Image (tube, rainbow, N blue to C red):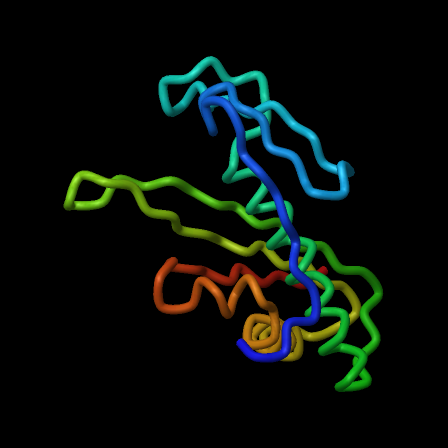
Length: 142
């Protein structure tokens, strides 16, 4: 990339996801991490997949709202839930997959699908993971 608009900076210390800490350079985020119980850890604290899901859902939601405004589509309401999963790879490592659950009200299904695809093309998280992380768009209308 040549024209950086913003760079978020976070530092992981101590034991990383296994009881370590993550902080942003501005101090607004300061969390202890824990391995989820489902992965053999103690749970009870945030994990990197939750942080990734939070960022992706917010970013995608903003892209969705921007696309709707560009296309002059009024949404009665909208919600985006990012579900980020850890999966074992055949090589013995781990990978991610994701489902973006997109709920829109006030539009027909075809319009909701079109807006969601356009948001998926705009969102930096979607662009960063494209071709590397399998992503399903689960689009529903109310």
